[in-house]
Amino acid sequence: MKTTADLGDVRGKRVLVRSDLNVPLDGETITDDGRIRASLPTISALADAGARVVVCAHLGRPKGAPDPQYSLAPVASRLGELLGAPVAFATDTVGESARAVVDGLADGQVALLENLRFNAGETSKDEAERGAFADELAALADAYVSDGFGVVHRAQASVYDIATRLPAAMGCLVRAEIDVLQRLTRDPERPYAVVLGGAKVSDKLGVIDNLLGTADRLLIGGGMVFTFLKAQGHEVGTSLLEQDQLATVSEYLERAQRDGVEIVLPTDVVAATAFSADADHEVVAADAIPADRMGLDIGPESARLFADKLADCRTVFWNGPMGAFEMAPYAAGTEAVARALVEATKGGALTVVGGGDSAAAVRQLGFADEDFGHISTGGGASLEYLEGKSLPGIAVFDQAQEG
Ligand SMILES: Nc1ncnc2c1ncn2[C@@H]1O[C@H](COP(=O)(O)OP(=O)(O)O)[C@@H](O)[C@H]1O
Ligand SMILES: O=C(OP(=O)(O)O)[C@H](O)COP(=O)(O)O
Image 1 (cartoon, helix red, strand yellow):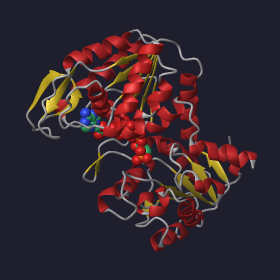
Image 2 (image 1 turned 90 degrees about the horizontal axis):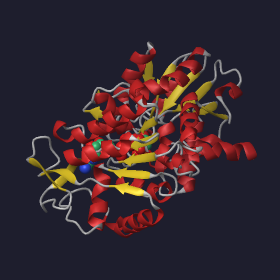
Image 3 (image 1 turned 60 degrees about the vertical axis):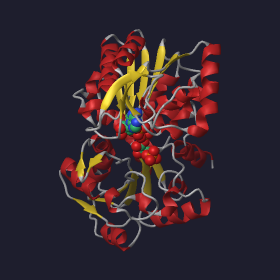
Image 4 (image 1 turned 180 degrees about the vertical axis):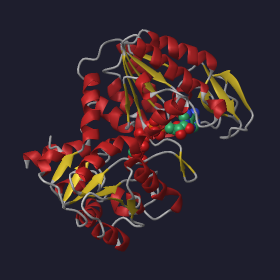
């Protein structure tokens, strides 16, 4: 695997670094800067070596056109504070502003381009459209460094296509993340549990297919729960639901039972009248969610059950908060699972928390990075790695080496 050392002397070279700076925002306030901090080692090392560092990243899921609420401007300010040096911000990604900002960089200086996903080419399924955007990005630089671990599972222009267009290397964050995750895939100590939650349900339900073959226990919380409960024939009210995945989930439940894999579902949930901290909410049995309510957290009985199921585990991977933890009334389930992982870590288990919001949740709830074996910057990326899937942003380096 190529490292930045393989790029040779970078002094005076324009090096495009793909980072994952997809941080949670409250208006323009960054509520957790973990992903920015995790991106610093690669950026600093290149700047210290005299490169003209051009950082590119996405924020949220804008629809291929500029959308001010997803601007990376607040991230540029924070990145500058953390680096202790100003970061020039380009108000577009590959246009006039980007070219001017890159041209204005001196050796050792850092710039950040505006949100990659303001350009339809970044996420396009059409190879030619993606390639054309990758060409425009490539024109801004002399070399490329892939350091956005949280996006290596995306076959997107700045992750995949660009790596074939410039001398390319892996950054130290991607390499560090892979080193830890390898310990989970190479003969994990058992029992091995995977805890799944969060809101990217359609993205992440599919990973269960492979996890049924590797994990001993799957604990399901967050927005994932309701497709399972519905598949079991229960009312889920207005909760998050993947209607078209019901048959798949039923098959998972059958297969798990047949193969002796434990799928642990909540027995109670916190059900609210709206997605709001002020909404009327109550704890109800998981099989009795009122039709006009949505489940926004696992209930207290489930929190105890989940903690119990994690207590004897020797390896735990967790992605996705157990509830809408950003709102205090729905944070208890996430806090209970975090506490259970901390206890498991103290007992010698290998625990990994992955995902932008999951990492933000544990920090927001007052836990320290050292309380866990590892906090990964990638949720979906880690899960797909654990599934044994080929990740486009990593595979492209193998292809380049073969080719
Ligand atoms: N029951 C639920 N209903 C709606 N949203 C939920 C629920 N449980 C968790 N969430 C939301 O899931 C989001 C995080 O999901 P996701 O992006 O999949 O996690 P990560 O970033 O850790 O990979 C949080 O913003 C949280 O509010
Ligand atoms: O937040 C991210 O992933 P995660 O929520 O799975 O941790 C990454 O920045 C990838 O974002 P995407 O899932 O919109 O491609």
